[in-house]
Image (cartoon, rainbow, N blue to C red):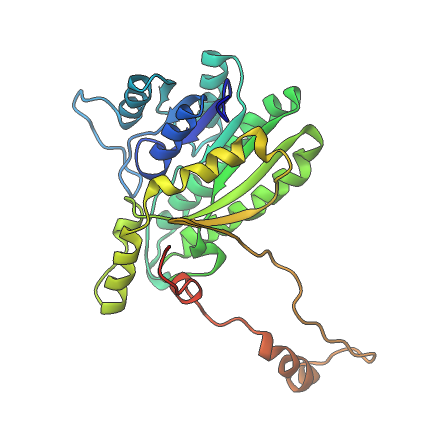
Length: 307
């Protein structure tokens, strides 16, 4: 039996890139898929189609042509009401919902001192708020049926760091905390929640600046990392095969799957007398300094070529 046979899955932002490949893979494994995509540009503006089919409709056509079952949805993840409609689309069409893949995203990259309020709110609205809204919309259904899976897309920009992405990095690290909270709160109902940090060449990564030799080299490495390599991990995490996997963060690039660390104490110091600002400067910080983390970016930490 296919791994997702008779399951109903919502994949947000699945009109192209990583989301499209996840939707196709879910359908190939037997799932009924709600292909959600508003048809927006990279920065979030909805693109007029002049009568042409939407990205969501195009992916649905691909799935149906391959013998799968899917329905398009063009509601936004960025509001409570529209997220409710996305989940209700699954329930109305197929009678239930078994998994949410929170993949929808936009970029508004700016160096921090030039980032605007609009840049901040737009990215947080789609990535962080959107992941909460859709997961929350599914939560009551999951609780009643005592099963369900949330798969969220985070990023090494949040887990490790990157230039010019304060809004995106904050949202993506916030998603990790959201996922852990869902795993803790909903575990009693058989609901699981995990994150994937994907590295792949897509519309999102194609906007990365490439001016220096190092940046050009990084882009060439990214081009070797295909979107379709992310999909098997998403399918597995949404399936019953992963019934004991929850609260985890996986990084995926090309043929590598990495389990990412989570924040834990790495060094502690104490004094019976209590600390003063001066004793912190003289004793505490020198003791902890060897364990400080440098200002790394993803390429510094994952410095080897993709496999």
